[in-house]
Length: 121
Image (cartoon, rainbow, N blue to C red):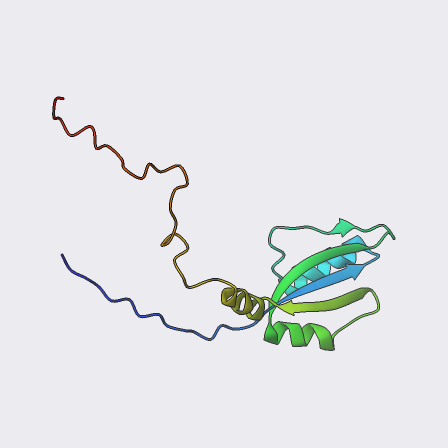
């Protein structure tokens, strides 16, 4: 049997930004999403209580900066968070310890009788 060593490689990932785009004009919002080719994760605009439409989109750093520089009166663009940084922070919450290593069954019999090995009693 061969044993393989696995090396964990840390890669630097490009930031992915979560943004929210709002507009009172639904058609202008949809046209903007299609023209910018934004990733909306198969979601569409939802209507908020005040009558505006909102959609969540995900974009890379370069495209985010271009969107900020081209803000218009019709659209309100709100940058929320870098999802890659959030994922890295969440990885720190994960324990490296085997949580089952010290586990014992509460109902386990301290002196179990072995049965079922084909020996007649």
